[in-house]
Image 1 (tube, rainbow, N blue to C red):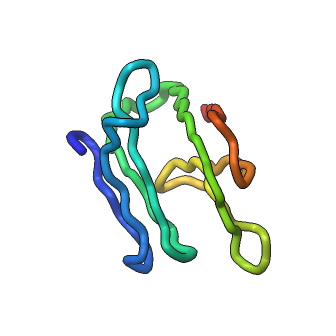
Image 2: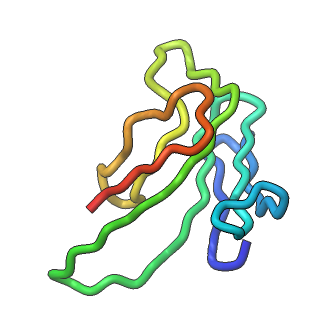
Length: 100
């Protein structure tokens, strides 16, 4: 996954490039968890101070089972901040999330 790093909090999840599931004609990142885990695909970008940025991500979900408290599920976040989208539905074709 050139330009991306995969990480999994408990080591249960996996992230890999998926050349079969395309978005806008380009490969996507497939994330799979056999059980609840915080699995991430991380992209580090260089930013400048006092500059506004807009981060947009798209997610397709299928058969997500949240943990017992019902608070977890697929979401988009910005590492090192408290920016986090609301969890996506259990199954959705494509969902867009934008943060500033």
